[in-house]
Length: 398
Ligand SMILES: *Cc1c(COP(=O)(O)O)cnc(C)c1O
Image (cartoon, rainbow, N blue to C red; front, side, top):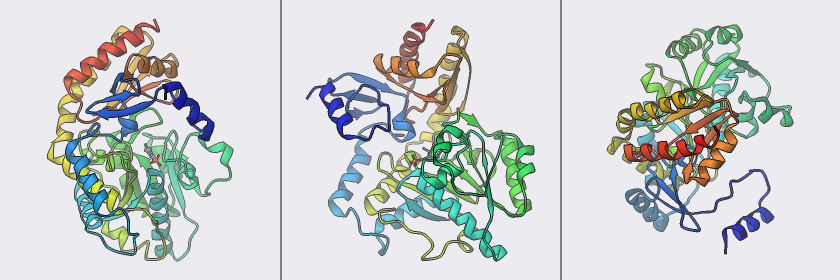
């Protein structure tokens, strides 16, 4: 079939909830994707931060195919070696203690919220606690996750959402203080805001929120679904801040392409919150995804990818400096590690579309931020190729 025939077939039967780009991908290798016509695309998106090792990594693929032949699924009524190993690996790389595996990022958020609510209700002997979330945050599309997502156009058609959510401004400690009471069970925020436009938390803000949570007995939930798993130059971004959450949410690169997320809690939280009967999932943490999680934790560390990101970041940032100097419509850039945003004064959508035509995959964040989430294995040559391609793209908007 031709590309157009695949696109027509898809549009005939898929619920039109995405405006897809006119490309049909066939396979990937390393930092390149290939479409059904054999055209190569340099990947600076990683399938939205998922494919941290790039495509078709032999060691990862072997682990996954071995597991597919052995055992795919049993349910959470039983133990498997894979769930034991994956939980241990994730506890180790995160520095937290107890893991619950989910099928997505949004489900990890749901679990984190339920855990915080249960923790507070056991402590206080009643329910009815509130959550503080951030403006411009993004935590997912399920109703609970949407309730703590601070972007109106994602939320408004679906009102009423979960009650008891108050919004503060990211990187504005006073605005969090103004909302804090003894009835707040949790503050939830992304260590680096992703969809909202690539805003890293200020160290003083994150420390301040941690202290405020401790003062009021609220739990700190850090959502590292996008920024975790080595992307910012450490396994989790919070590890560079000297601040530890009570609950961590993680997904995207956690399984390197298989659908898996998790929320991870401290012993203190695990001992006084959810108990058997409070929460569950049929697929969550099945042997297939857990084989992937154990392997992704192993490979990201063994190959020194957080360190590689640290080494390459100045070079990537110099390239972004070059764009800011060269183009009037590129005003600044910001980010952490391999999570970078180039701020434009022109609409970013057409830039992303034009880049695809040039064989370069990039993302947007909001209306005016060009978002780069390259695979963590990206080398200098790939950054040079991105610079050359994106220069051609941006030249066409002058
Ligand atoms: C992608 C994302 C989510 C939602 O994850 P899904 O797997 O799409 O449900 C939540 N939080 C952040 C920060 C994300 O980037």
